[in-house]
Amino acid sequence: MKNLLALISTFNTMDAAADCTPVNVKPAHTVNLKTYTARWSGADLGNGVTVTAKIMLDLNLISSPGIIGSAIGAGAAFKSIDIEVTGATNSNANGRFTADDFGRAVLRFLGPVDLTKELVGQAGFSGITSEFNVFRSVSNPLAPTAISFNKLRVFGEEEAVLTSFAPTMVEDVTPTQAVNFPMLLDMGNMALYCR
Image (cartoon, rainbow, N blue to C red; front, side):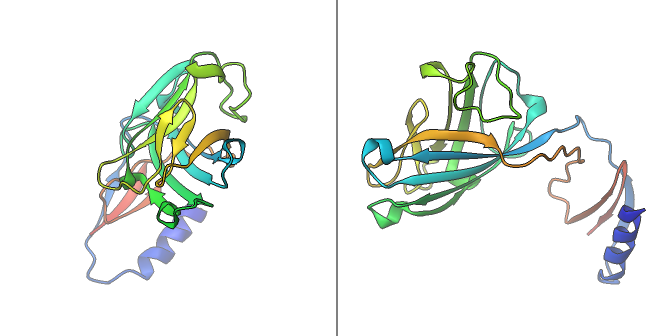
């Protein structure tokens, strides 16, 4: 009932000229989205760099153990990545970077892991056979990039080591993905598509 009330409220505020059509939105596959926070620190390497990432993963596309190396976005295990760099000596390295700044990301664990808990320190996520890393795209040389397992280099050559990769919050989401729709008001298996 709340969804219907929200839909009616949203519909009432829309432009009267909007062309809206009810559509049946059964997804090709159900997604299981989880948001994680990853942190890298330069403290053990003698610098003040801190890198913090918010990552949204589709857990239905990840197996444990597993290796996921993919682009970021629709259809990929990595749905979104947002990274902030602070504390770098070169001020050009500091700032916020989004999925467009990265060509791909990698999450590798060769033993079983519990993705509902902190990964760093789990037996299945240890040593040089497990990692989470991002690789900058050629379009943004200022973005941080992987240089070895669980280690990033920021612009200006300072490095930081992965110290944490943990769920940000519990949020089992099973939405239908409305990619490139100007507006899709979701009501379970039915939606209102408006141009």
